Length: 311
Image 1 (cartoon, one colour):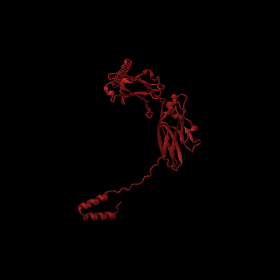
Image 2 (tube, one colour):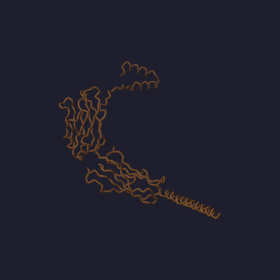
Image 3 (cartoon, one colour):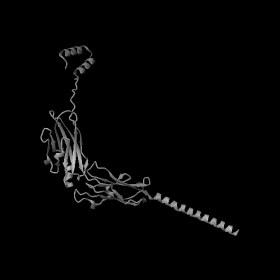
Image 4 (tube, one colour):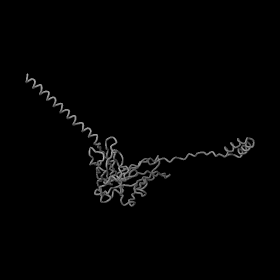
């Protein structure tokens, strides 16, 4: 803030200095110099929330771990959530310190003996179908400190899936094709939940659905069936399908709604028959030359023997 004496001095100078200088001084006087107040930075309390990205619903439990650093402060509570509903609270000043809120979801069962301020354990059901809803979801652990009640939160997503135990099987691909031949192949995935979606590729280009037919008999009877998937690819081959004389066909089994699922892919190669035919056409001529050579050698030997006999 400028004092009254300073204002008087400034007005005195403005009356006597040239107009450009007066303007410069006036701007400098009216410009507020802001002093940046250092706000205390909120330190990160929760370091990491460990949770499986994909869990098999046959598992008998789901374990999540919350790692945090209180920075020397005392812990007030650790609250565990699934979506926006609290499942479990750990508060060291209570006895017992852990309390479950299982009524938040009928499908979730908190194991109090194996849950704490650092860990949440959910019990599995005997029926894996119930575990799909019990396990999968968005989880959060919120850590609060005493006195200031400063809190921090970490979030993790868990998907329930039964992944295929092997790559898909690609069948029906012949070793050689000619232009205008029809390509008919099929691809079968291993059983999974959710059932896999089959995607075909030719020379790394995804094939449109118009060329693909899905085997409806392999579809699940209900939403929890663990079944294989099967699909068929059929199209007329042209010269463009053999850019280097080869045709690369691949099928991929994609687990829907599970973005973190690994890739299940099988790839095979076929060749353009024309190049093989040219090679095949060369083989008889080589064989004929060998036969002619052998016949000539035999004839020469017969002439020599007859000559010796006459002599």
